[in-house]
Image (cartoon, rainbow, N blue to C red; front, top):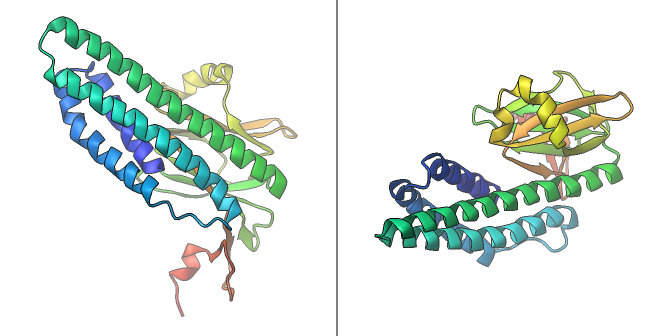
Length: 253
C-alpha cells in the first residue's frame, strides 16, 4: 500500500504541475489503471496472520486505506476518461476543476493515513518504553530508517521507515525522543527558512524530547514501521518477529 500511495502522489504531482491538461492526464491514465489493478489484487489476496497482533494492527490500517485509495483512484480514472472524451471547452474546464477536487481528496486520504500511522506507532512506543533512537541507514532512493531500542548493545526493537525523504534535521549519534508526532502548522512556518520549501513535498514528522526540550524533524512522503526485534549477534533459534541484523547475515561463516 505504501508504494502504491507514493506512486499515486507522484502522478498527482505531475498532472497538477501540468494544470490538468488533457495530454498530462492521458499520460497518467494507464499508470493509474495499473495501480488500481495492483491494489485490487492486494485487497483480494490479503493473507495476514490473525495471530500476529502487533503487525496486524498496521496491516489492518494499510488494508483500510488501500480500499479507500482504490475507490478514489477508480473515480480519478473515470474523471480522466471523461476529460479525454470531452470536446467543448466549458466541459473540459469543469472536468479539470473536478479533477482538482479528486486529487485534493487523495492527498487528504494520505494525510490521514500518516496521522493514523503516527498515532498507532506512538501508542506502541509508549507501551514498549522506547525512547532512544539512531539513524540506522539511508538509501539513495530517499529511504530513511531510524532504529529505536531499549538496549543498543544487543538489539533494536523498532524501525521507523520514512519514504521519499526531502529534508531531515537529526543528530548523527543516539538521541532521545519521548514523543513522535506530526509537526504543527506553527512549527512548519518557523522551519520554512531552513527547509527552503522542502516541507511542501511531504509531511513534517517530529521526534521530540520533552525532558531535554529538543525537537528533530524529518520531511517525507510516507511513514511505516517494523516492530521486529533485530539482534546484533548471531542467535538460534529465532522466534516470530525476531531476526538478525543484516550486516551479520551478509558475513556467513
